[in-house]
Image (spheres, rainbow, N blue to C red):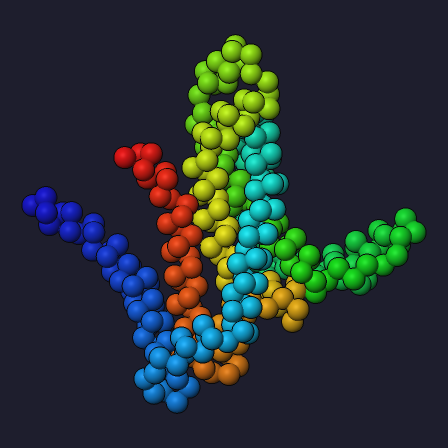
Length: 269
């Protein structure tokens, strides 16, 4: 009776896992071994790893994802630290989460209005007598907007790790004569490292395959593997090469997850 009851609960999860996780990945791997003429081949992988264009796209994707994650951490960690010390911290965390309820496309178009040649930012510059800046369709604007969108997802795990820290550790460090900087670097940061690693996973992995923001904010100047996948599936109709890039992205994401979870798992064991 208990086995049938457990099976009833496991069945929907297993169906969801097979239909929406395993099957799509299997299809991507399957199509990666076919060329544009639907012939079985290994040439897609050979072309990817021997082409300077694709290797440059890979380097750009990793670099952009690294910068987006870095700026997200630099902004999110102090914010999470301050919010964890506030009286009404649940309200402040709600305000942090609110932007995630807005559609990504709407936020992208909002930044286009802010950063465009006749946008609000340039209007403010002109008001103070500063020259008009060409901020849209640049690497800096792409990283700025992407980091802004990812910041709430970085703050939450770091904030949760900070709220789990016992106040006795902070009091003990102060009683032993530690400065605020020593308490931060030797107590708070090491204890919140699991939250930092979770935030890196949440931010870095999606940032590897960004394509909509790279089109709308970065224009054609920001080229990543995500834009290459979009190009192959929607323009050139070369699903084999697009699937090959998808396989490379999946493997990269798995590597990032392994790098950010191994030490924590060892600590638990």
